[in-house]
Structures are given as C-alpha cells and as structure tokens.
Image 1: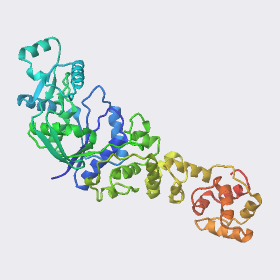
Image 2 (image 1 turned 60 degrees about the vertical axis):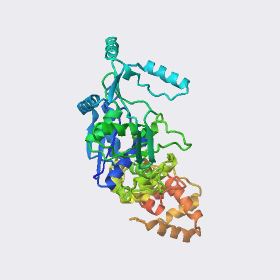
Image 3 (image 1 turned 90 degrees about the vertical axis):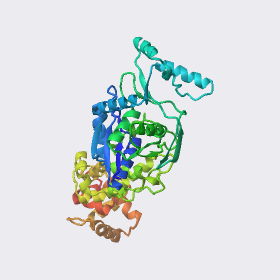
Image 4 (image 1 turned 45 degrees about the vertical axis):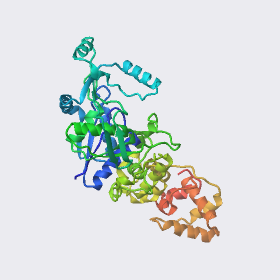
Length: 447
C-alpha cells in the first residue's frame, strides 16, 4: 500500500508549533515510505476563513521545508459533501434535529443534574412528519446527526495502542449545520476516502472522534485508514500550550524570534520519543530511520531554551551559501566563507551576525585597560596580508617581548580589538578587522 497522508489546517489563524509538529510527522512518515503528503485546507467556514491565513500556511510550510505533493481545498468540494450526505440520508444514517443550542444546553444540564452523561437523547427520531413540518413552519431549520450503530468499535492506534468504543457513550455527531454547512466529521471522512488517505496522523484531541468516523467510513462504503494520535505538547510546567502567546506562531518564530526552520524540525521530529534531540542541517537526516512507533503516549514538554540551543547548533552546521542571501538582507557587508566561519560558532540567531559585522567594520570605542602593554603589542603587528596564522605569529612576538602569556596576554588584546571579553576565535576575526583598524584600537583610538 502506497502511504498517503494529509495535513489539514483551517485557514482561520496562523500555524502554531503544535500544528508544525503534526505537519512534520506526517511529512516524515510519507517520505520515509516513499509516499504522498497532501495539504488539505479545511476552509468550509467561509465566515472565518481568510486568504491571508491560507498564504501564511503555505509560507510557514515552505519555511520548514515541508513541500506538499497535492493541495486540496474543501471549499472546492462542497458538492462531494452534499452527495455523501444524500447517500447517508437515503440509507437512514442521517436524521434531522430541530433543537436550538439553548434547548440542547438545557438537556445537558438536566442530564448532568441526574448524574447521567450529557449524551443526546435522540428525541428527534420520535418526531412525526407532521411535527417536523410544524417546526419547519415556525422557521426552524434542522441540523443533521449521524446515527451511531449500536456496536463496539475497536481499532489499534499506532501510538496509543488498542482502543475500544461503546455506542451510546457519546452523542450522535452533527454532520450538517442548520445553515447547510457540512462539519469536520463528515468532510474529513469524505476527503480521506476520496483522496485515498492511508494514514491519519493527528493530535490526541481527535481521539474521541475516531470511533464515530470509523462508522462513518463504513456507512459510506469504505474502510477507515490507519490512525495514529500524537499526545499534545505542554509547556515546561506541564500545562497546555496557550495560543494567546504570539511567539508560538510559526510566523513569529521565523520573523521575530529568528528561529531556523531546521532547528524547529530537529526539535519537533524527536520530541515525545526516547531518541536524542540533535541538530540537523536538512530534512534528509530526519527521514532516515523515521519510525512513527517511536512516539510515546506521554505529553511532551515544549522547552524554549532547548529550541534556542538547537538554533545555535543548526547555524554552526550551515555553509555560507545557505545563509548568504539572508546575511546580505541583514546588512552584513562581508558575506564570504571567512566571515561565516569566524562568527557562526557565536551566533544564537542569524541576526547576531550583525554584531560581528559591526565589530569588523564600524568604529568602536576600544576597551583599554593597560595602554602601555597595548602600545607595545601594536608595535609588533605584522604587515598584511593576514590570514588565520597571523594571530599566533603576532601573539608569539608580543609574548617574547613582554613575557606575558595566557589570559594576561590574550584578554587585553581581545578587549581592545573587539570591545568585548568573549567572541569568535581571534585567529579568524583578526584578518577581518585588518591592520590599520587593529593598530588604531590598540592605541585607544576610535576605529
């Protein structure tokens, strides 16, 4: 069986890290089996769907490299849902209900007061044709429920294991709203059937929907796909991730926080498994050996600090060609292998490169603590051209002339030349600063 998976966001908001994890694991599962990754835009809610969010979803997936093989929009498939609903009606699986939201809420409260589960009582099944006509004459329009079969539904979830469901423990799901709009349970099943989806990999918050959907697959004449339900991420304290935090959106991670797409991929691909989380420069390394069965049932904790550490490590793995265009967009003046190899080990975010570009090219006030020693050191600066051996040649000469060694030799020189105590290796940074600027800074001149 050729693996076909789908990622099905609604274009009613920006993708969050939880969405990214679902998308990534679907993509990796498809690629690991030579399969197909379908982007399905669940845009049947015309009032809330927005093309701005559709464009953002595509941009976010491009950013993390999750390129899709097919794209489907549910708004283009409304006739398919209408046809499926009609088949269900004809077969007796769909029945009309006329209760208002307030009336349904009253029923639930009454059931809970009696210690019973708030399950729909199927009162609409007892309505006569005359009663339905009267209600519609009053202006009521029905919503349509799927009549669950009185059976036990069992399936093996690829992450949560054996699952069983007894009909009657939940309400018959609503498939069609009063305004005629099809809802997720129906549209998702119709699409999965007609698009040939073999594996549904989604969040554990959908686990409760699965039994009803399995019955719906069979009522429509098909067999359900394989299911895998991933535990939802929590914050570091084990609380549900809150969407009110703007920095959880992929757009914010990319544009405001400076996170690399592969840092996020490297993190999310192993989060929730017993495998070590390592930095990878591309997706191929994550596809190799990917196994959906490695994900556990426990809710994984999203650790922002760990993501930042991965971000720094990913930058260290990237060649200059992978970042050159972005460095230029940041205003970095020297974009070549020498600059990148010098600074990448000291970057938490790519934008930090601007700091070292400024150290190399902008005037700075030197950090002068021992002017006599620094003046002596300036006198031993070798002539250019300089390369990565110049620092050792120079400091060896200063050491011989002054008797200094270790931190007493190197720290005053770094402070004067860069205005900082720490930073990239000086053997790589010194040739970028250049002879005249180095001499001026050692003398305490702004340069």
